[in-house]
Image (tube, rainbow, N blue to C red):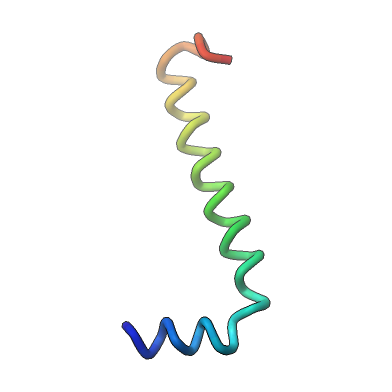
Length: 43
């Protein structure tokens, strides 16, 4: 695991924007599903 992290840090600069976008999309989808379950009261 540590070696993989080091490789990503050294050579994976181009992957950071992709990872950030993916995390944002996942978080947004989770929040959206929670809001739908609440009946969109917090919109």
